[in-house]
Image (cartoon, rainbow, N blue to C red):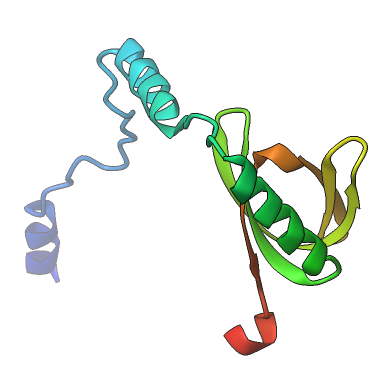
Length: 123
């Protein structure tokens, strides 16, 4: 048994539990990269001609109450939304959409794409 104890003393201990912090030499660099990534995500508002706007409006009215995928621009970003078109207000030019019980208002002139979405066929 004594020989076993002697061999245990020769086993190195190692460094134990050491916690390391992330290596950040220049926090400003991360701020600049985040800012550049956000600037790259911004897109200009799509320029839609009268014919395309009329076509989109007809399609919106045709698909009212249906499951659709709306593509629209808002405040520098493009969005894609799977929803149901609930109501189109001619006076304020807004489209009311329902997504998971939430009401979403979208300005008509910001919509640039609409497609019927039949989720039963997707499954």
